[in-house]
Length: 204
Image 1: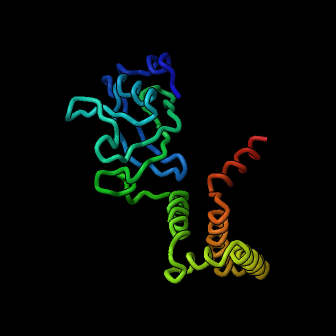
Image 2: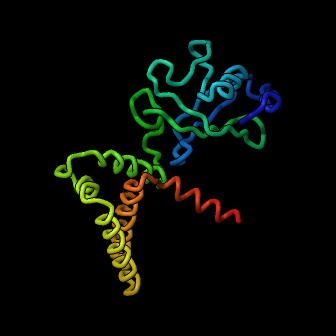
Image 3: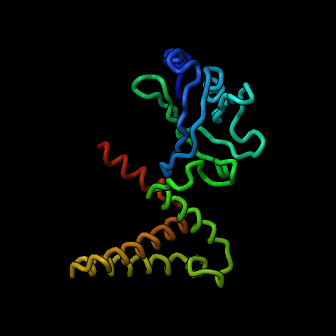
């Protein structure tokens, strides 16, 4: 998180004391919105750990979600190389856009963003009636059944590769990833946990 000294060192004069702040989902990588901060708004963001902007129309500070409850919990704040814009990684509570969409750039969903959204959907099926969906039935059948499906799909994925069937390889890979996500959710784990392991290995 930025210190008071680092906030003071930003090039506020260049941006007429209103710094553009790009808000990005810390897990999915999706860009959620763009807002503006003066020094007071940035200091408040750092202090409260909730994104606070300066409203150019209302001429005052406003914390994102102050009325809706859809706050943006700050994970990290970085300045660009020219010290005249900010990138803020967040964990949003609820949709970010006032329209009810998850992002103000609703069509710009990254591959990682899709996987994160899929993971949330799969998590919501854990307590659902097993008669309502295949995923809910998998959870109801238990860990052994889910693990069995992961094993089966893994073998089918490998077999598709050995015969150089690229279309089948894509289909089987999709099945494998889906069942692996279900298994992770069943074990109270998620993609973020796995990505954390990969990052740690990459740094070794």
